[in-house]
Image 1 (cartoon, rainbow, N blue to C red):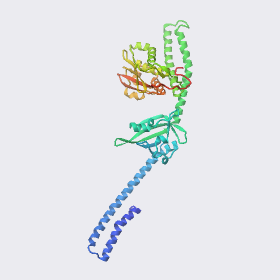
Image 2: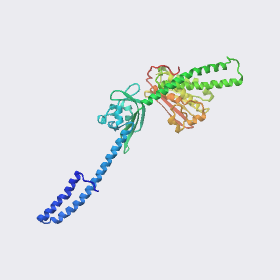
Image 3: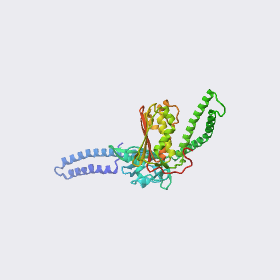
Image 4: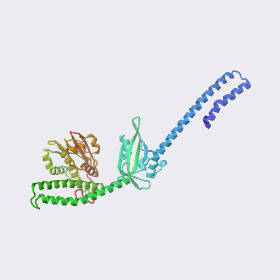
Length: 435
């Protein structure tokens, strides 16, 4: 059964068919000369034209209905997602937000279209400080043209309350040019609460473990010193093994405790003017036995123009200690280990390089994760907690710096970390990192 004509199509047909028909009837009535052939051709042409026009209009209507259906499906899909979605143009102006985004921030689509996203949903860090627009995920994507993920900040709602947000932003690219940004975000408050609860449990468990471990250490030392009488050679070996294993357990517990304290914000930061060259020398002196065992000759180079800077020496000592311990541990006998400290712009850059086994390419993305150890490191050195580099990253970032590395398997690794030349701000806390 043919489809019914809509009003527009009916008027069009009337114009193409009815009017020429009336003209043809007029010809037969009034017998106007030379009209017959002309009107006949017009009539036939209009019939054909009307047929083609109606078919085109119906195809156009079907295409329009199909586009509307797809748009409705897309809107339903976006509305059914649990995450908020915001789309901005190349200037950072909002073009679209879905229902969930509106509910999370307290604004409707009609209220935010055309506005800057950073004005609609201000972003704060954990301290409540507003993140500048140029450092937000959407603006970073626009400037760099690469996807960005962030999970450490907070969106401020319309009513002034805030929630912890995880955001993934990616560029919208047309003909090789970034024409906008699409950002997907979700409320991760619950996940952060769970992480905090786990961290508090680790902190409590680690603290409770220190007492029995300390007791084992004291009694093992007493036995080794002969306080309970002279031990037989075999007994002495057993006690040495107990003492060494206990030391590894103490190291693990201390690492867990320090990490949990940093994550909970309990670490007290006490900056004092510190000579980084002297700090590195002290760390190398503590590692002297391991250095001699590997027959290494560490090289230290410090820019003489760098004076003392305001840092917490206990925290930064841990960074150098972990990086140098790894460099020594994973460098073959007679290899090279060096430390270079230089100044660049408003930052102090420390570089720790070794000629060791390197980090396999497939493992590099996970190197700063908790408990992760590279596959080749496990073969070379079975002992290890996989917490050292995670602790390094946590300390450096809490000191307003950043850390990164380059590595090639069987050729060596270089780690860099920066500290503000202006110094690290003091911070109140319950404990220091080595208490």
